[in-house]
Image: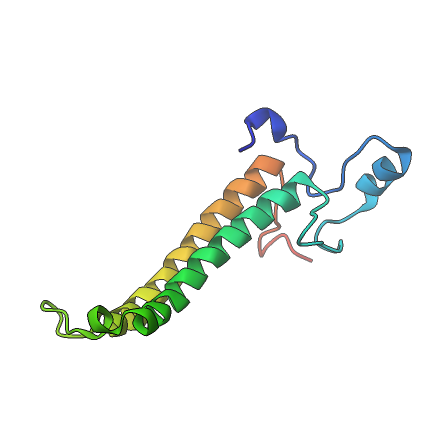
Length: 130
């Protein structure tokens, strides 16, 4: 976990001490730069990929968890739930997975906005775009 002192604004640009890296940092647009998912080059990219991988892991469990549990333990997953009258696997796939996707979308937007604010990245609004 990084502290606020680690959150120096780099605007998404590569940072470093060499002359080449410094020159590249001034001209590199992180939105157009190649992103290595296994070795992100900037603190912004590392933080952003951490958010993406966390969301992906939650989504993976929400989508494939009920199916896997049904294959492993079909008894409890296919038993009708007393309150709603559906089997648990049906409820989790019909209600749980889409709801998780919706909540993950909201979570991602909040985390991305916080990340943009942390690194001083501003996005043009509709009236400011060319």
